[in-house]
Length: 626
Image (cartoon, helix red, strand yellow):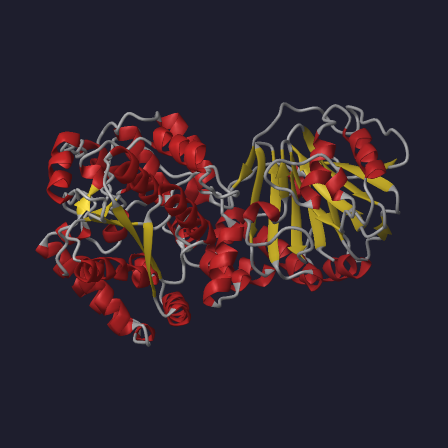
């Protein structure tokens, strides 16, 4: 199974960055025979414990500039380093928190083995891997770490060879119930790995002062643990079958030090002091007070009001109960509530219209069904050639990976823009003039999508047809340039994408947008839909936004991974500007929103025919904007 290794160096054996990098590279190359699906390491020094990991082969991680920068961070004095070469057995490697070193409370640890009764152990928060549950158990015994290790081993079933660093103790801890740990000790040096051969190879090849090339290789016997102090790296052994006690002599007590996950360093970005938009947001500027230009330029959009809406509806309202309006109905939150308002509160007789292009979620379809049935509303559906549309998405994603540009991500969703076209067609077919979109809510504005094209959006009230002529022309030219730079985009989707641009930005839009007239209130919407209709939500998220779009989790994974923010950051920032939540609450909610929704991404990749792990590893390898 996985390969784990580590090294302890006293202050007088400290290595310059280039030499440390050479030693670490050697340890990774030796140990990756045991696992190539993810890699990571943790470094402890006097000022804290730093962690870095990647969902990629160790050899690939070693090539990254980010990893080199991590190793070259300034660290003085004695240090300890852990490494992990992962063979996935519990938890997908595409979720960074599943990769190792695992972080739980005060511990950064690596684990080789499988805990077969992990479900019987206390949960470890959102990270539910067997390794996280094991380290969570140990973390509960901060006052007597060896005793905590022994207790944890008495509760588990299955192989477990572990190594970890503790933020409250200046030491490296090892333990094994199989004997799959070997070590060598030199003058001011301690090194360990998963196999005797690995230590022997390292000892022979490493130019490491203090560790003789013939230093004895010893085995940590099954049922034993060891404490290795950073200032005196001679192992203090203890039994996992007894209540071991740690003394101040074994490990000098120290004040707690920070435990920092530097894997996503860019996500600790400079952000606007008023909203939460980061420095990587396109076209953003901060003033002397740290306030961004999007906050400074913000002006609430006035609503036309219910009275104005009623006047328009009265011109179309039927007197005999026959259909009098068409309501665009995706099955998402806004359109579901809009259908309720139009039928129940505004007294209209709508026909609901849906366009299924292949990435409408099953939750959205079920919500369409329950809403139309409860309201007694006729439901017209227009379906695309779904296999063809999904094939278009797959080809465009693969083309994008050849030359990733964040401004081209919306191309993946071009297939759904026929929604506007079919609304115009159904108007002709039914003879009903009034088409209502339950849209126009400024909180859902996402300027960054055109910002990545280098253009700033005008005031358009969430009606894409209202983009100014200059903006539309600049967008068209930018897209044309990307096609020329990346001929892979000239695939069978080309004419479909071209028509999507026409349907969205050129074809006349004279639809009625409900939230230009009525206020949008998230609490009221959720309470009404869930309470009155049993409206279904995504079990993997507390957020009810965009649960009808099968691509949302995927594109937000891209934006968050590469740029350090997603649509959710813009949504929460808009809520701040409207006075709906404060900045602290926005940061808290965005952190939850931005957790990768693996099952939703998996559903997307299965639908369009892409390999999940391969796709997300390639996305993770894209150079970051931070």
